Image 1 (cartoon, helix red, strand yellow):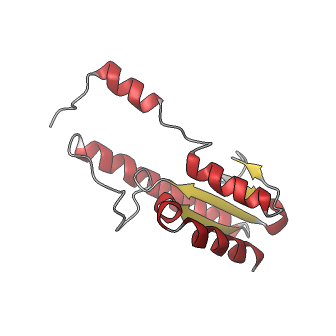
Image 2 (tube, rainbow, N blue to C red):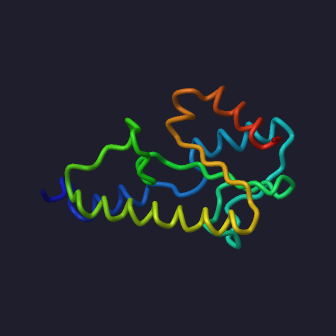
Length: 137
């Protein structure tokens, strides 16, 4: 099935999608800061360029979009009806990069926390307090 938008409209729509400073990411950052954590953002020298890095705790946090990272079993991950094969390939490549970065970080001794946007939408308070417990443990 062909795309429902022309090339210019599609290009504009895609350009509006943010890769950093997203609402879920900002929510996590504000929560961490309010609870006394200091962090670095999008550290390019670490595999996968984690969204949040807590050097003191040797912990990285990825705030993943359910669609873009193909969150299995999530109601927010819906396979597009147009260009389905192209989208599935794109999402599979993202998942592959995620796994490779996770392996490299584990080998380097980093603790990895992955938060999904659906967790922050459905159960924000519990998710954030569990995050605190995980970081401190």
